Figure 1 (cartoon, helix red, strand yellow):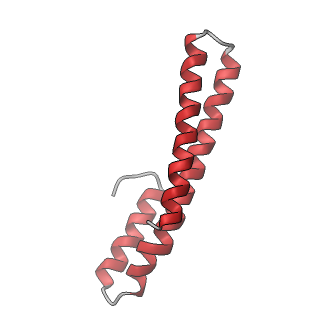
Figure 2: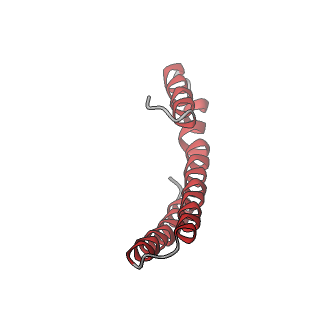
Length: 91
């Protein structure tokens, strides 16, 4: 993982952690359900953004390296891995 990606991911994770703590507090305070759901949706969107950031980095580093290599099995493995993760299944 590139250093800038790692730093950006760490910042996003800290923000997401704060959001989750905020939702826990809202639940404990018996806040309005729709307000809680909106915050949960914001967390899901933030996680989706983090996922995209990490996947982009993976494609630009690990996958690109495998595709440029002479090892056909390594290329196939990286492509299958991407298809699996984007399809929401385990490899």
